Length: 436
Image (tube, rainbow, N blue to C red; front, top):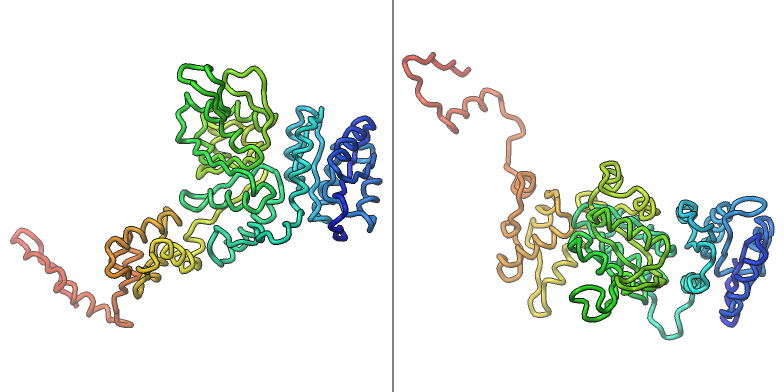
């Protein structure tokens, strides 16, 4: 589609066969200073999208149309107009349809009856996706140095996937082994999204006592319980407009899973002691080192919550699958550990030793190994002996024993008594067989 001029108001396409709802959406968007085109059918919407004079910054479509499903339009816009976000309007309680639309590439969704405050927030988020930075402003976070270091094929593919995911509002489930960088990936998604200027709140779900979970997530009113001396916001209110990361989400108790599901679906929360709910606008990113699908099968995690959180899945590779990045990773870690006066560097053979290690703790373990080694290093030079790596594989990689190309079997066998001489047999024992 053609680039819009800097003086033109952003243009939105509304697709809905209900005249009353279409008119309500049009009036709301016009009051926001936007240009609006409307269509009642898929065919009309396709015609408007194909017109060369139209450059839409957002498409808003109903899921059910006279000549097809809005899901068809979602797929077409996602494929042909990659820079145009599309959002869907779903019937009340149709959470499954919303999830299907998000998986198909929808930017976001809104439920009927349409709450105008939520509509405005969603539209503003969509318009920020393609907004040009003001003159003189530094490039956005998407162009800055990535938090995910490395140049291996897997890490480059991961960064490309994150760049695509950042343009959506769909919930993301990050899975990966402990220490593989799940929070870094979540922060990267947030930094490249239209929410980059808003809060990023990371919550370790396994570290909150069960009795305090509701108060921590949703907040409480003054006097709601003993010790509630002041009103306090919860994690949802703190992350309003930004991103809420639920780390180790598999550790949530079942009772809290029910309340979390409602908050995600309704986009509203009620503080403890309050009589009314308040709207919240957060993007949910969850992470765990456990297999959530297995947790569902075992009954420790609700299937409906899993379905809501696992709209888009992002898998992080373990360090042992991207050992080509070791030089870059160690360089970044050593730069952080050193100072301007005292640089830290690796001695001869250290990088080879690290490549021979399996890193069960991934990048976090690499950091710990280098920090510990620095404590034993002389003059800031880390040697192989300072690493104190465990495992025979590392020893073989670092100090390979020189062996002749081929030795006759007889020589090997003759050498065995010299290495480990056998005790002299007692009279009752049979004599040992002579070596050849």
